[in-house]
Length: 112
Length: 117
Image (cartoon, rainbow over all chains, first blue to last red; front, top):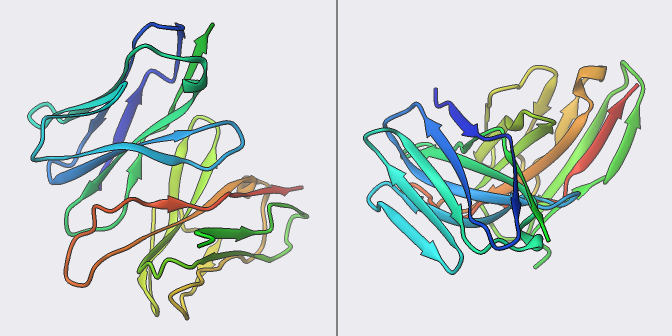
């Protein structure tokens, strides 16, 4: 089955810096890769996603890149703000199936 | 729409007790699932369902049962609680248009924090 690895487990940056979180997946048939943000004590919420027919997707300060050959994808947050502090999860889904497999999460701390 | 709702929000059980975590959604979603979240281990899939009467196991199904008698409800049963089941449990749902693969957003409920003593 699919296995998703996520790094780093914790990431501390200064406000205004960029943050990058990386994930690798094992199943070459996976073709959908969402990213979720979970604030303390809250539920995970989708912030951006990408399908395997696209190499990059942007939404304001957030971008996701996908390298199908290397089987890895990354979340990029530019101009970080304290409200970006949260746990971020990557996930992968294989077409034809419905199960999302999640990475272990990255705790991002943005210091003012 | 209330979205995905879960009850209770908090629960403390003694080892060996049984209980049911409730999950309901009002978005007419075909797919529903249960995850447990433990520190450093992310979200692990317990059981899932692609429609009423259809359920299947995820990564960590042992000690849990599910059923799906209606589209709206997907309860998770702990048969004999153990301290290893202390965790935060999230229910989630998403749509699967008939005959297609759904890349639609998966919505999570607010979670149930369970402690087993």
